[in-house]
Image (cartoon, rainbow, N blue to C red; front, side):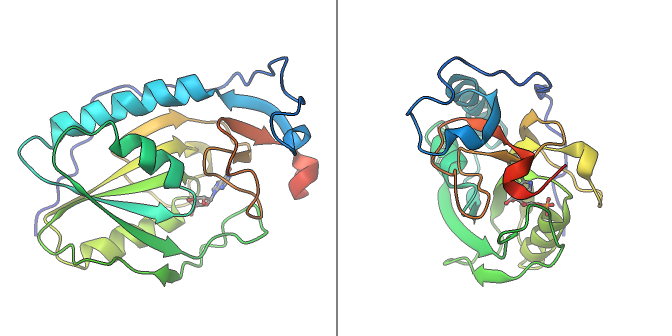
Length: 210
Ligand code: IMP
């Protein structure tokens, strides 16, 4: 079996300067006071996701990839990314156990919902919200490879490389982010904040962090 692990050539923006716009703390969202700073604005996310969709469309020209979106965190990213993909493709979902109310990975991964369709002989692109320790992705890659796929690649909106506990290859990365707990645009803490249209840093007091 041959896997295409060629790394994509486009550059990943690194985000190190969170900003705090004047409207933060207004009545835009009920719990915005829990947000320390905004890391990625709606506009930054949309521009980058458009670039990623265009890149994937070029790389997969002549093939029909299956996007495997990892519920729930990757939902917003998946919806926006797929609308920027211009080649034939399909979409399926997997749900795996997450942190619950913890803010850090336990490394224990359980499949809560499996794919609806077989991906045997298909070109799979796993769509993830964030790669942190890499433990979840490592598990997912093994799981998908064991289904006899033609190839498997990974598209992640965010990457926190400083937290890696296992070596994993991420082919399409939206943004590299610092070691902060982030929420919004699908990302949660204890199921909250997914509806925020931007990615923000959660105040450590909220999750009992540093
Ligand atoms: P990993 O197994 O440590 O790489 O964690 C992957 C999963 O943990 C992601 O898909 C997220 O659901 C969650 N996660 C990791 N870091 C964060 C964060 O900063 N905010 C919200 N969720 C996170």
